[in-house]
Image (cartoon, rainbow, N blue to C red; front, side, top):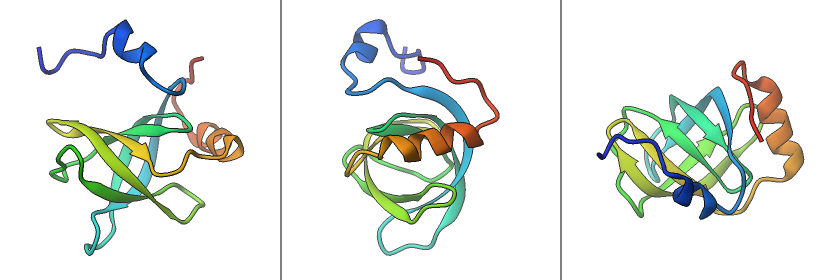
Length: 109
């Protein structure tokens, strides 16, 4: 059951609607070097990271979205090679729009 998609109840608990994307990003843990990874969905409050980096719930990381400086985030959950993360400060809606335009995947509302 650990690999199941999130339920409708989980989605209702989110602070903002997610949009599916496939965007290359750069990620690092504090004190480490940047490396390439991907995000699979994003909202103004968080993202789902696809990475081979071992992340644990509650840990901090930095993410660099294409065209922007690094920003701090916290890991909320981790499963296999994915982690759900929350931005320390929500994205400005214009930044989210820019990220969605870069994505080759469809967005949903």
